[in-house]
Image (cartoon, rainbow, N blue to C red; front, side):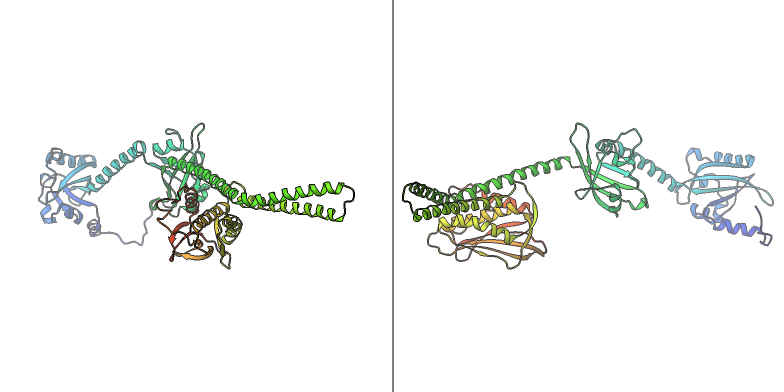
Length: 502
């Protein structure tokens, strides 16, 4: 080591000043008598004695009363330092107030100006021992957590490699318990907010926490679904992510089962719609088919007359008229069938953005078929602008038909009423959210109860399946459906669906 020649030499007072400023406790003993010659302020503060008070003290005055800290042992330790130059021991001092202070004490022989001394350096290690105990306790907790808890916890680095996992978590993802762990994606498929995701996307979303879902597939076994959160603990810096999970396989299976039940309900709703429409158009189809049969009978008669001698132009004109009329009646029947097929569509649910006005307009034809034989007038009061909503077109049309048919039946039961059933649409803001509103208003018998809260039907021969399906269809599409008494008699059946900006 090179010394700067320009640096001033230190004198003995400088060294005393440095020891006075040190946090390490220092006691200076006489090598022969073991009496205390001097103590720095840190030692005086820890032992709670002044320098004048500490000088006459002996080992038994400032050490623990336990046998291993007896004065004889203390003197032997200091003598060992005198003979060997240095000696280290864990010593328990005792302060003036009686507090026992565990220390790590180092005795060093030093040559003083007029004698040999023993300098003892020591520090309070009680806090260190407490920390050590806490670490041992924490280690035991972590070990218990890792091997005996049901908590599903994984610790990963930024590359997605597994650093640690509780036994229960490793068993759930199918990772080995006693072998090196690989990447998380070696065992699971990741999903964020219901869609497949890469590990890079998961890391990007964890700022500082994000929901995550794990899908575990095992050969010959049902899929396991885990759900929870991934976060970057503050103490980890830029590396390390903690994933806390719980098994939601049962819930996912329930959702799958409910989805299948909903699909079955969709089919039921559509087939119910077809049944209702078939009844509504039976009369309408019967008329053109009967007329076509009559026209064909007339054509046959004129065809026989045309074969006789003397048949004139009048017979030919009658024959042509009969054939043309027959074609028109058949085309009318075909139009009715085409309208039915166009409305019902495919028996699959497809969520679309559609104009609620269009749905009502499409249904109006079939509503008219139901209303005409009952002698009930139907009026449309549609919004002048498109009312765009997100829904399943055919199923929502089924709800419009169900509510309208119910209103027609109510009006038919009140023969004295001459007011029409009114179908109206509009766009409105409900609780700060834009909605598309559909209302069927009638002047029927009114409501004896809320059919959507207590019973879906009050008809003597009704099953209520139409209103029950309507309720399920609308609420499943995040809408609301309700009924209300109409002032002056009658009722309103209403539903809303989430609106979409045009």
